[in-house]
Every structure is written in C-alpha cells, then in structure tokens.
Length: 469
Image (cartoon, rainbow, N blue to C red; front, side, top):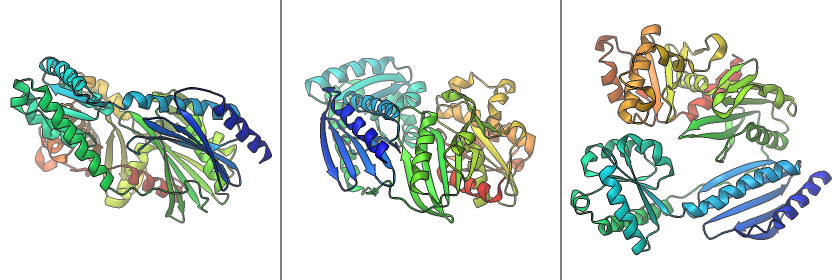
C-alpha cells in the first residue's frame, strides 16, 4: 500500500505539472478518495484515486450531454502505465472540443445535389450562429458515415428509404428534407427545423432517469466474473458482469476509442483484487482460440497466451471463449435446447458475420475452434451479384449477403432454426423473402431476428463454465 500511495502522489504531481492549458485542474479529497477534476467548457474529465484494500484509479470523461465517453479503472501500481492511460484520456478529452458542433449528414442518390445544399446550409448556419456542420454523401455511404453524426437528412429523391434508415440508425435524428425546402434550397428553414429537433431530443433525454452506481468499485463477493469484448458499430466494447451463484451482483463497461490487451488485464486485476473470493474468470472475445491462446487479427493480436497471462495474478479457473459461440449457446439454451439452431451475428461494417451452431444444447465448435469466422472463407467460393465489400454498405446489400450465407449454412447442415442479429437488417421478413428465392418455401428453416446479443453471450458463458465444455 505504501508503494502504491507513492505512485498515487507521483501521478497527482505529474498531472498538476503538465500545464497543458486546455483544461483547469481542481483537486478535492473525500473519505478514502482523492479526486482531480479537469474542467473545460465542453466536457469534464475526472481522475479518482480510491483507497480501498488496494489503490484503484478511475479515469472518466463526460461530455456536455452527461454521457460517459471514456471510462476505465485499474490498480495504481505502475506510474508509467498510469501516465500512458492518462495521456489517452487527455487526448479524448480535448477531442470533445471539436465535437461540440452538431454534425449533420445529407444523403441522396449520388451526393451531388445535396453537396450544393450542404454548402448553402453551412453558410446559413454560420450567419445564424447555429453550431452545425453539414456534409453530403451518396446513400451507399450513409451507414458507414453515420457514427460520427448527430443527425441524418434524407433528400426527397430517396425519401422512400427514410423509414429503413430510421430503423437502422436508431440513436440519431433522421429527418426527411421537405420537397419544398429542398427544391428552393431554403437553408434557413432547414436549419430552424434542425434546431427544434435537437431541442426536443435534449428535452426527451432529460426526462429519462439515469440509474448510475454511486460506487463503481464497492467490493462484492462474487464467484464468477465474465468479461466480454464485443465488436459493435466499428469499435470494441469491453464490459464485465460479476455473478454470485448465478445472481448478477455488478456490471460495468470500459469506454475507450482504442482497444488493447492491457484493458482486459487491467479490468481483471482490479476486480480480482476487490473480490478475493472470486473463483472463476471467463473471457469472451472475437477471434480464434486454441489452447488458451487468442488470435484476433482486427486489433493485431496473434497467438497470444491470454489464459497464462491472467493466471499470473489469479489462482482460480480461467476460461477463454469466442463471442459468436457463446451467443449461439446462450440463445440455444433459452429458445431451442432440444433442437438444432444457429446464431448469425453481423457487426455493422462486416461483409461476413460470425456464426455459432448448437445441437440439443451442445455447441458445435468445429475443427480449430475458428469461432464463427468460417463464413469469411465461404466468401471466396460464393457467387455474389457484386463485391461483398460494396454490399455491406447498405441494408439491401446486407440482406443479399446474409441470405446467401444462411442459404449455404442451411444447405450444408439442414438446421431447424436460425436467429440473427444485424443492425443493418431491422426485421426478419426481408431476409426470409430473399432466402425464398434460393430455398423452396416448404423447406425453409425458421428465421428469427434477435433484439440484442449481450444477454445471450453471458448466458452462454455461464452454461459453458458449468459444463466445462
């Protein structure tokens, strides 16, 4: 503890001495805690030093809307590691300044006509002191560009696609540009409509009560810790749940712009320190897994012995599973324990989803534990009407891809039931109709769209731990 307090003092002094100029530092003390608050006009950063049985640091950033855009915690025992993580937090904090403007995306068939309107909107927004920035893209690029936007404007030429865009991009304002406004290039009217829409969205947010834990790190006695890495919306989301005899006692999520293995080990070290009675850890992640080693090419991980790394600081059992496999197993246990079923999970921006198969509640792992990535290989032998990388950009293209992959899956296995999750395919009906063009209706498997994957992932992990599959 004395060495950790020395590290704590070093970190606080180092933050004070940075003289960055981009924020003001305020230091306060609470019971068993020191807090450094980094004040800016556009976001707030917080460094909490928690004095528990061990010294635990938390780094947090909240934007102007009160949303967490950065959160992590780790045991404070390595000053250089703490500095590196703070530098990453600081970079994220300062980036919030450029995100104060509302980013608005205009889309139409080719992007040319909306480009002229976007130029006019930017001119008028500046004159009206409206903090908005407008850009234009063709329809094929709207979904891959939407993540950094606050609103989507749909031109009249593709107004018929407005509903499908709204079903997929659910966390942004999606509006049709009135034909009269677009034809007259009435930028002033459009800006005013957006101002009103943003005000209504903010008012709606304030009405929704947020349940937040006052103490993220209060130590609970749990028996099983499950940490998940899920690739969603172009980023890796790291979250964990702590269970005591199958009862959920704590849940938390790490929020960062980048992902590295130290994020996993930092989280595991912290929770194991605070829960000495923990007996099992389960890590669920994308990638291929063999003999406790992980290969996850998307983030540059190759044949890394993650299980051995965790066992350096944890004496209990450690399990490592693929995410698609656990989602499929969790779904099977809840919905078809006595039959054959598959789960097709398609992160936005992927041309080939991940798939897991269960028969009578038992996971079919396959040779090499490819962990659902076998569909990428199928791309090379499947005939598509156009390049699969182009198809992945639109809902229609995603339906085409999924229908062909799942038809192949059904043809090879004769499986009874297929569930899928894809934000780009908002309902099962369109996928079913497309698959009927390949498979006679009387032979079609049951096709169901799942609303989420996270709960299935944890259920599958718990089932695997209990059976030691």
